[in-house]
Amino acid sequence: MLVGVKRLYRLRHVDPEDLVDEGKKDVAFCLAPEGTLKTSHKYYYQVQTQLHLNPYRIDGCYFFLFIENGGRLIIVSKDDELLNKNIEKLTKFSKDVILQRILLDD
Image (cartoon, rainbow, N blue to C red; front, side, top):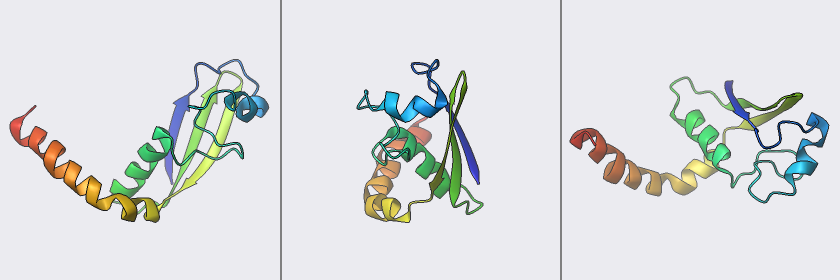
C-alpha cells in the first residue's frame, strides 16, 4: 500500500470525529459527506497518479489527514476507470508538455 499524508492546517483544532461535518462548510474540502476522499478533489488525482505510475503494482493508498488532535485515515483504492477515461488526455499532456520541458530543459 502507498501512504499519503496531508496536514489540514485550517481545521487543525477540530476534533477528528467532527472533521467531516466541519469540512461540509467548505465546498473545496477534500472529503465527501460519507468520509471518503472526493473523486473530484486534487488529492484524489495525486493519489491515483502515484498508484498508476509506481512500478510495484500497488493497488491502494492509506491516506491520512493530519490535524493537531489526531486525524482521519482513509483507504483509497486504485481507480482503473479514471485512468482509462483520461488516458488520451494524459498521453497528449505528457508528449506536449512534459516531454518538451525535459528535452528543452525548461
